[in-house]
Image (cartoon, rainbow, N blue to C red; front, side, top):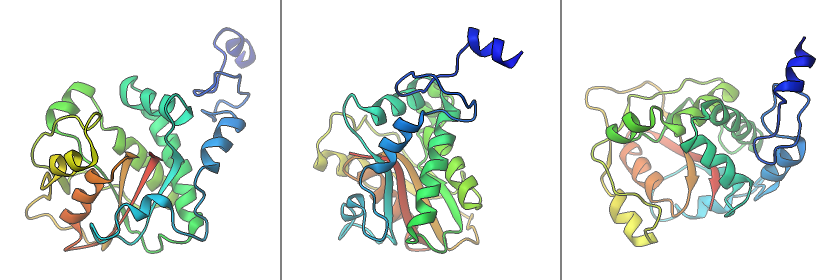
Length: 222
């Protein structure tokens, strides 16, 4: 019966649309291998981490894949952010969580914190894509997800067409710890979907680092 169902509704890779035999997979082996292979930081420092040097106090940083225009990472992130593919976010989060666990540079992470969305954007989209990724990471690392601790104090203009300096100014003092709420976890891992200039994550780290050790990670690094 399942075989007949797959003939009518075949299970395909979300990146290249090749047929996949396992319904548990969202990417074919080739596409999954491609995004895993970019900027492998096993035993070393990921290039994304260097963005934060001298800007904020982080323990470690990494990304699953390199963002390439028109490439696999862009197609997947577009589906996650704009086509309601929440399960894809969790799936990519699990791949990212596996990488985080195997690098050995994120020892002692006790909880995962997604970069929060502004209230109006969350209402419009219906979900926070960073939270979807964070849930996959947390599942792999076997730690909790904290969603009500780091808050966005004000909405910001879209970062898409802004330069590095404009992004930094746009993100400055946007995030804060929710008053009267202090989680017991000391080492937090902040998750975003993509790192471009690092402005958003720098603002998050600066809001958290006076009370916690902070590491950061993302699905893609541009």
